[in-house]
Length: 144
Image (cartoon, rainbow, N blue to C red; front, side, top):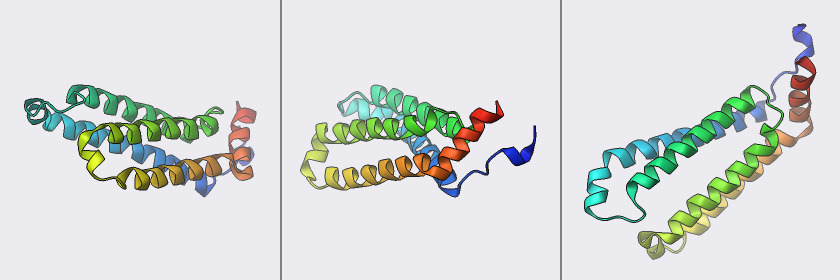
């Protein structure tokens, strides 16, 4: 295989990959924190069940880790999957915050989180679907 035929990874694709990886790492940290505080949270009868939240955090960590790998390996579905999965995660995270009683006391947190997630979704969409990134992902199809 001629190395000149493989497109160089655009910096925005690298940033998007790093961001997706960090979201996975964030959920892995969330799972670790929930695991360590599990006894206390169960004693306090926190809702939803901390074990369920731990499992969900592990699933999201796996999803974002796999998505970061897919973007890095130039899988053709990754430019479309990344914004969709980020939007689903944003809806889950904001919805979970709105449904928990402590979050209702702070009425502005959902707005700040919404702006944060909207900026992530817009950046990932732009970074992975701009022409340079399209050439990068297209060259993966040509190389195979």
